[in-house]
Each structure stands twice: as structure tokens, then as C-alpha cells.
Length: 166
Image 1 (cartoon, helix red, strand yellow):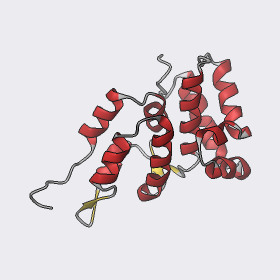
Image 2 (cartoon, helix red, strand yellow; image 1 turned 45 degrees about the horizontal axis):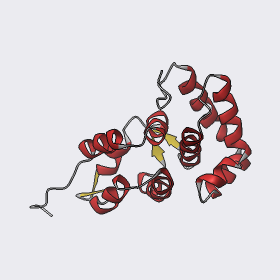
Image 3 (tube, helix red, strand yellow; image 1 turned 90 degrees about the vertical axis):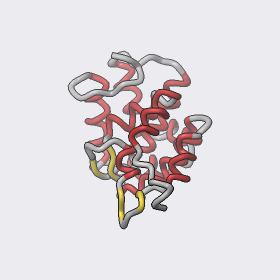
Image 4 (cartoon, helix red, strand yellow; image 1 turned 30 degrees about the vertical axis):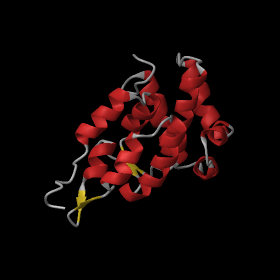
């Protein structure tokens, strides 16, 4: 198992899903994560610390950059109300009234996020456009593994509007 991958029926994936499901009954924990304006604020939330400690027990590597990405994923997952099977870029490109839910300009800005802090802010603003629905494990894996590979996969999965028709 790679450190950037959360999969169903694997320890890290099961821990993450269980933690996210329990957030529904932890309104205080969810609220504090949702109010966190940046990754540093997420790290200070007890709800995040519970996830981090459970993952550490299951072998999560103690690397500051990876922990920050995990915190970003946890902070974003607090905004997800309903699990979806569709990937984020597919959901963002899905058509509503002949336009994608997330405009190509906004999507491009997400892809151009220089670091995970910028990605965190951009996705926090994007999740309401998706009715707070996301594939929990895919979102976490993509945020923790953010880089050129994820950017390219997202670019191919997004349904870019045809310029000629626009």
C-alpha cells in the first residue's frame, strides 16, 4: 500500500471511512474542521488528531509534508455530507443547464494550485458546487498524492466544454 492511497478494504481506507462516518455524529468535531481556514488550523482540531493517531497506529509514515496533506484531506472531508462514486473531476465537469458545475476557469485554477494549501482553499470553495458530495477515499488519495500525475488524471477526467459551442 502506498502512503498516498486510501482504498476500500485496506487498513488506511477503512480507518478514514470510519472516521468520516463518525463525523456525522460529532457535530462539534465536524464544525471545528469546517471552520478551519487553513491546514494549520485543521492540525489543531481534536477530530483531525483522532484520525492522525489511528492512521499512525496503522503504519502511516510520520513525514511532515504527508501529514499536512492528510490534514488538508481531513479538513475537506468535513465539508463532504454524502459519499459519491463519481470522481471529483467528473463531478466538476458534469453538466447542469448545459454548463459544467465547475467552470473551466475555476477548474483550471484548481489544477494550477501551487501547493496543497492553495488546493485546500480552492476545493473548500468548490465542494458546495458539488452539493457537498464526493468520493471520500478518492478525494483523500488525490489531496495526499497531489502532483503532476493527479493533475493530469483530473484534466483527462473533466468534461471540458467545446469552445466552438460555447
